[in-house]
Amino acid sequence: MWKYSSGSWSDNLGTAQKGNTSTYVYANITNFSSVFAPMSSSAPSVGTVNMDEDPIILSPCSNKTVYCWSNVGDDDGWDDIENIIAVFYDKEDTVSSCSENNTNCYINDSCSTSGSGDTRTVNCSFSLTYYANPSNWTCNISAVDTSGNVGHNHENNTINELIATNVSEEIIYFSMKPLEYSNETNTSVHNCGNVDINILLNGTDFSCKPGTTCTKQVIGVGNISYTNTTGTDYTNLTSSPVLSDLIIDRTLSNEGSSQKLYWRGYAPSGTLGIYNGTIGFFSQKRS
Image 1 (cartoon, rainbow, N blue to C red):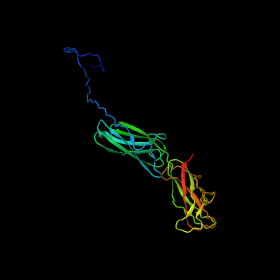
Image 2: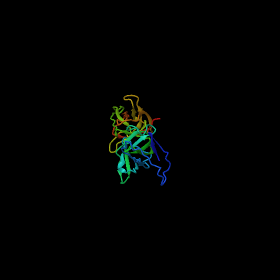
Image 3: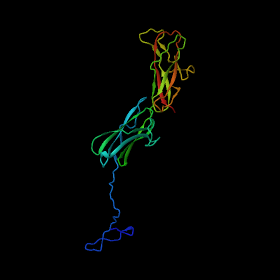
Image 4: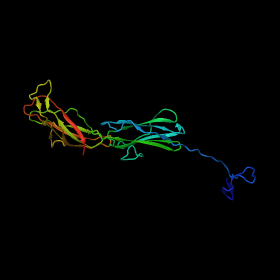
């Protein structure tokens, strides 16, 4: 037991004994107002974090929604949980406290919940742009209670490289007389992925359009030429894919990234009619 004497407390009274009237219990109650014993608050718990796809394959030139979910609970009751936030981030490039952007950090502070009781399922979605970093990513789910206690858990994932292009004009028209070149036309080629790319080109011979009359049945593919600098340095198209000089950097914003290719056709001697053919666009990661 404790004794208060001369302004200090000491534990020197030994053990009280039955029938021993000389043994007392002392307590200092000078200026006593109140005594309380605060109960400790339990931190929320976040179970195993899951994702619906691993690795993640992004959608060319559009967004893709992925989901991250877990069972979240609190021994002090579900109503003690004040906030739940999920962060999906490129762990090679940033940290879980990152600022939201489309390349390395996505945040959801309005995740949906389902179930009842003190533990419920929390499902968090992220709309990923096609140019999100190809890297190792982490989904971290955190729950904060009214006392400021935090529980969290995470799951690692991978976003794959996306190599993709889109050509704005599906049909290219050439109009020319025999032994003349056509006027120059152009196509816009868009980088629809998350890496820098080179463009390869090929084509087919141009054949007489069915149901029409032509003086020649075929115009060779080499009569179509291209350049990435308007009006100069044309290269003849071939049947096998050939690496062009066109380089399109990966975009880092919704403005996108594209470059133009310029085209012209040539009509050999004695050519008359309407001809159809195919021009192929291919992309590869820039080395």
